[in-house]
Image (cartoon, rainbow, N blue to C red):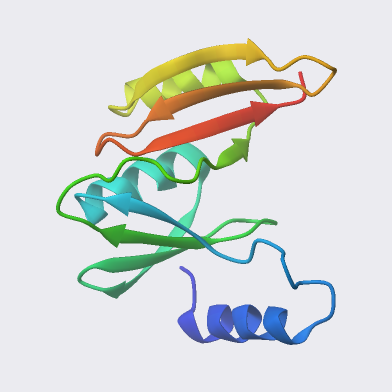
Length: 134
């Protein structure tokens, strides 16, 4: 389980180090059901969650930038698209669907040797992108 004190220390130390200005240090996923979203993303990507309040949960990403899931009444239109690197897009999309999500865009070549992407919608309606090199 993510320890809030260690997460806060790490998060705050990022702001004090050179090289982290203009870098992604936190991101958020809106959710109409925090428990369902925490279970979905925990099972899909292995993220660890820590409740912060009744309307917010922090998550930790092994070797990556963590963030939070915030409770919303209605799913907003996406204004930022995030992409999560996975080793096998089709396998991940199959797991998305097995967990109650929906594939929006199957694995698609980007071109210019930039890899591949796909998008899915989680059970609460949030759109997330996937990326892989192969």
